Image (cartoon, rainbow, N blue to C red; front, side):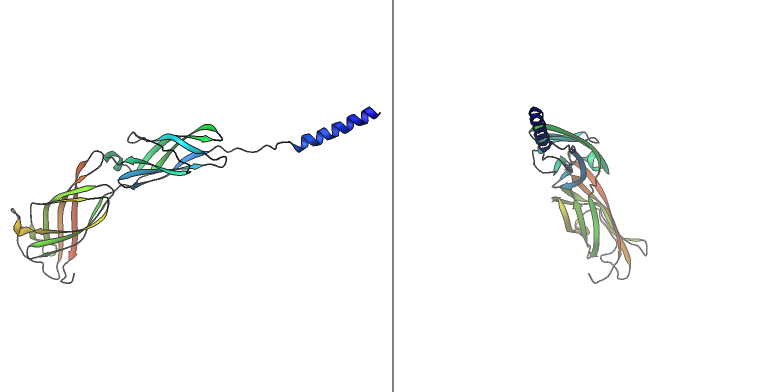
Length: 250
């Protein structure tokens, strides 16, 4: 009888001890990555990637990101950040896309073990070079053109071809020319330029008036010849057009 009681006591303590150290089961959510955007900066395209992770911290050791549209591929630098960028050169082909297909593999360390995270996504891409005429004046055979230029890459302005001013009310030409060299190089950014064209100094100019008349609408047109420093560089032409009423107050 005593032996039975002792065995029951031992069994009871064993049950309590086992219950005390029972490990409760939990859920493990594997990390994943996604592309959250693409933007231009310092003459490059930056693809922004975010790692969604609700489990253990990850130390990123490397990997790669590819843009399938242009077959470009760049390595991922080691980082502890969950949001990071991978930069690509801006090519002429890349600038022609409004969306790009991106995929890649992220290699990292989690709890001392190697992990690989694959991802694939579509990102909206907007690369544009804009040239806008703010206004223009014409006085004593000289035209001043005020330009606003936004360029996410370096550009060189070779010159303006076929610049002309016409009276929109009377459908009459005021002045016109063939080619005015400029040779202006612009770094990345937003630029405001004042370009002066003296038609008297250039051959092949057609001059009908030396000034504009108050109260009439005039329009300017021409072609801006440029070199865009994509990878590789490429020449391009921008059509210029602007119309406004001439006023002596500027």
